[in-house]
Length: 609
Ligand code: AGP
Image (cartoon, rainbow, N blue to C red; front, side):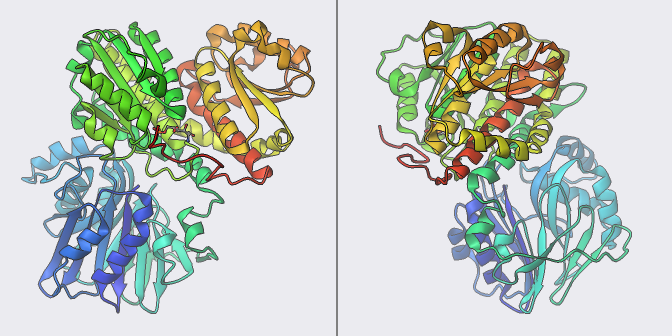
């Protein structure tokens, strides 16, 4: 979720860039930098940590009217000044928001031209590529570069022989532009433009913006002029930080495909096969080779990610995996064996109970690996190994994109573990990784159903009790669906293993009680349908989630509402199903007129016992 800004105008560029980066701080970052055209040429200043630290490093005599600025949320390469943007190679200086997926391949190729990177970033490889293609004609160099770059990008580029000009091009990642009396401004989102103008345009993909003091000229890659569609916003700053969504939670639900892509990309190595690769995370294969038992310790949603990870890991790795509620685990005097791996999961990396569970494992000399979203957080710092999720800052108390990014992390770990221990061969791992890499697209498809979900949530609004039922992966998912609904709608909700209903809870199922039934797993599908019939026979209002390739198996109308999930390997159904459950909770909370982002009694990170 990097932040980018470019300014070319009549004010002090370094001041404008620092202000702009300050506006973008909410996106989350760990380092920042700017580059400006000055009388002495392009000057670059970078700093790890906060924008304020960067401001304090700026030389007083850095007079300029044109420059670019960047806040970095590290994915490829650790947090360091050398990895911070802008990156420079020869006559090219650039900043980047996005992920270059084929940077390994490009790096090998460019080394033959005598260019070698100073940093560990995919962005520097892009600068090297552009420099290798640049002979003074910007469009020609960009035409060639976009043919070679795979992935998502929004670039702001300065060429040392083109003073006081900034060139931009994007694919996938956002870039908005405006022209004002103070100058021309481009940025990764509206928040950084609001100070200058409420009129802006989105740079169309593969179009080139030439930014100068007075104008922003947009052409296609052949140089044909394009007239962009001018938009205007009436957002205030708060709305802008939600990117126009009504709540952070809805914004973050929609960010999930990107969050998963960012979490996966630095861990995917594509050669003949697509394999998970943790070399950039410092997680060596020995961690897996010497593990015969896994304990997952976490709280709330993070624990639910662990529940799903357990089923996945046991099914594929055939080793025992237990999932512990961290607040119980820390006082349970747990039994460890020498080859135990403790995995702690935490979005914030500061949850007191989870941190205590981690410390307990470490006291006993047990190796620990954490799945964490916030860089440099306590749990990340104290774990032996860290697998960061790159979901970006999660503002809403109800966790959504962090959860699915945690799932992605568990899938990566499972497939690498299986590869290292020979449980799966390269082809089998690669097939799974192909499926995993498509989950973001499947989630996009489910987001298209939001209008149907919103309509349905009206019917849930008056509910007093509500049940989620499922088996296997669907049971773990039910637990997450239930906490999502409960914590933001205040409706009493329970998740139940569907086969367990008749052992007591079925007595609570009466006329009109909503039951959300997840039936995505083929191996237990018929059993699940029997359970649906049980609750239906007692008058439940059934909302059924099934995969589209299973709907022919439905004998008769046993549901009030049905959501079809994309066909495909059952193992990946949770990524699609969870979007429906998150949206259901979100819209029900909206209809109940509640504070979706800050529900009563709850905090984003529970740093106390
Ligand atoms: C999730 O929607 C809740 N906000 C809560 O359960 C949360 O997952 C839990 O407190 C753990 O937080 P962490 O991931 O930051 O450790």
